[in-house]
Image (tube, rainbow over all chains, first blue to last red):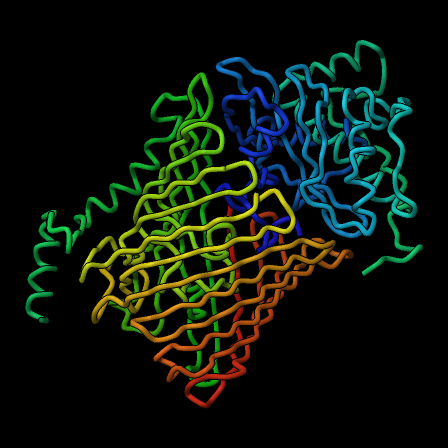
Amino acid sequence: MLAALLALSATPLRAAVGCTLNDPDRDIMRIFPEATNYSTDFISIEERGGRPLYLRIEERLGDELDDVYEAPDVAYAYYTVLEGDELIGRVHGVNQKGTFGGMQLILATDPEGVIVDFYYQRLSSPEAVRFTDETFTGQFVGLTLLDLRGGESPDREIGREVVDPSVKSAGDFEATVRGVRKNLILLDEFMLGNRYLERARATGVGAATDEPPAESPLRPAPGRTTTEEGSND
Amino acid sequence: MRGADERAHAVHALGACRLDPNDIRLPRGGLLCVALLAILLSPSTTGAEGTSLTSFEINLVAAHAEQEGWSGEVPHSQRNSVGFEHFARLAGPHGDFLTLNVQARISYDTSVDADDALALELHNAFGELRLGLGKRVRVGHFAPEFGLEPSLDTHATLLQTLAIRDIGFKKDWGIGYRVALDAVDVGVAAQLGAGMGIQRRDGSYLVSARLSTPERGNPVLGLSALLGEVLTGTRPSLYPTPDYGGHATSKRRLGADASYVWRRFSFAAELSSGKNDGAEILGGALLVEYTPGWNDRLAIRGNLFGWMGDPDDGDALWSEVALVGSYRVTSRWTLRLLGARELASGTGSEQTRLAVQAYYLGG
């Protein structure tokens, strides 16, 4: 799934990177029509902070990271979008396990980390049409990490505009929210100098610190990831 | 003829660079320098901005076929090897301008004497210059613009596309250009027609072109054309120099391909039709991958191949079905099991093949 043989990629880079854009030129031209070029960075948790950073990300996320597909040595691709030599945005993706298989979640953000576009590069859900519809994905536009429930923002609710579009795929909705949050947390850690972590601390929301947590944080509701309502395979 | 070949190899060994356009080779030392140059042109050594990744690779293969017995390779696929992959992007104040990719292996052929078993292989070995968003020029060793091979990653997989059986190799030396137009992507390439060995003999060449819908779409559809005088060696290698045997084969092809992702399934298919030295050739492949929802480390992949017109099969139909179970043991190790059965062959005795592969890719 997450390292599929049949994964299409216009870039020659292989398995060591978690999620790259299948067609970065076209994606960036579509999202940022004024873009003239972009630069690419591959960043891993291991190189940026090792085990302490890994644990801090888990605490911010409010969930444990998968030890294979979210391992510390997995490199994440960041596409810094330029107009001339001016930074106008970033595009970055993550892999996320859903109820019916993996999904690849791509975010485009402005220089401040505000979401300007969100789409699924891959989604294995029987209700994929509902999730990929712009009525749903467009609800994330304008949001930041602090607008999404979980981890360092346990009491914050997703904005009223963001509603689960599915009929019986709540697990994929929760996985999407987790993946988007993970994507933004990694962006904050790797590219934004932890400005959202600092803002969370300044407002007293959550308990994210630089110290390793004494115990594992709460996970999202596990009961909603089963197939008690049946899968459509 | 053999004496002439021996003299040619002696000249080659002295490092001479012949300029005869009908027999172009590079010194062996120079070939290794090509690979090292790509590594040296990394951001850390040039001072340019950018990023680079180097991954080391271990490929352990054990296979058994009814007629061939035990071996350390799956034909037209994987053999025991160690190697590395180096990927680098160089960037300036206006963004990325150059991408470098080198995939190199030292492989071991268990079917020959130990003195001849080792070989140096170069797979991807190219530089790609960006000419603006959606436009790039590629120089080096890369996949011809034909069929599924340019868009699928088959470097370490047991199941392959039609490329080796169809063209004779997966990658070739030359120059290529890709452009993203409004509704389609266009790729063209002009290459030496000799695969991994940097040689041009008997007027060899290969030109190819592929028109496809954008890679970000689903499905992705492609149409390809290929024309060339192609050399095919007994074993793909950069060193020792491949033994190309007889004359170049005249190849003409038209191809169509498609790929589609649906829930936990990925599908890809390709058809190729044309002529080898005037004889009709027709082939097709269907690839399917399924990932169970209950375990995202496991993937099940299947191939169905059909080929007609190969003289090695008496021009008869050759067909094979194969199944691979792939399990991601850790973030760096993957274990694969292959079972393949020929459904038809020109020899009249179809065989079953089993193989196991342990593959490592990491820092």
